[in-house]
Length: 382
Image (cartoon, rainbow, N blue to C red; front, side, top):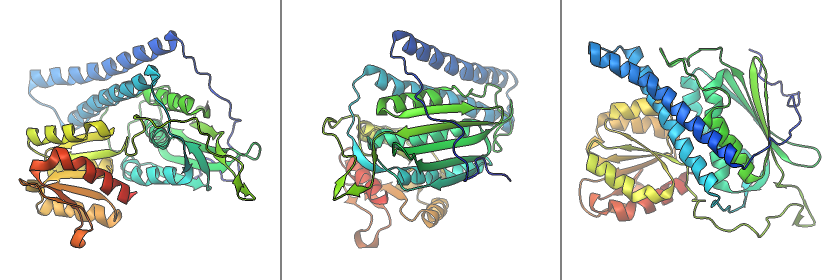
């Protein structure tokens, strides 16, 4: 199979910034798109529910399509919440020197299973590059680019990082083959017809993050491919006599919006509603993406499609099936985070203590101890 972009070729365009409009019209357009996309997905889902209520039957393909339609509406709603934060104008950045290559590589490893489940090969050619950006927004940007590519790609996605000769700016390039009209992912037997267009809400989020970070972004679409090129003006170059040619500027303040773990995905395995509520309340302030399942079967299905950063589980779930799931994830990802919530007590033990493979928190101290455990375990795994 021919590569999406032969390594010897330059990206088929010269980066130029897509113009951002900060007018009320721009935000009205986005609000309208959020409402339209959610209504489209939920209308299709409602039709399936109506048929189910009338006939009392739904096949496996219809159930999967219903789940996909509801999940699509949920994704659009979450993106709308993220865009609302940008619209507020209250986001302040904490610029740091970040290894762009490592951030991209980590995201590709994390999303590898999801891409494989969709029948998509992810190729990468990543040159070392150091940039100065807000780390949380950079991580969200790369995740969003991957989300956008997976919405539309067939067969393969390619990521590249290189350095522009002059000025010496790091460039992140993503290109993928487009699905044919109406084509469904390999793991979806039946799906609603309303596949998001290239200008989906996910793309809108990619644009907005780039504008906020002051990056140069350019997109080129053809009948068979779509590609995006992002240029980082604040790139750390080689040092001359011990002084970096590009240094961190002092005008970026620490922001409450720039949480070190914000955007990390956490799966909570708990059958009891009250425990789910306690976990949600304990880590609500951390900016994490939370998903909940009530059984090990659901956790296994979730992990086949998406690899979370951590799994929080109640001890009642820790049977033989769960041990197989944990062993499989730990084999592929030795630093994968597991946090067990014991039935009762105020126990607090981190992984690594006395050879322990996972953290344990007593039910009585979830609100006090879970945030600290997550910060320690997730930071240790990165």
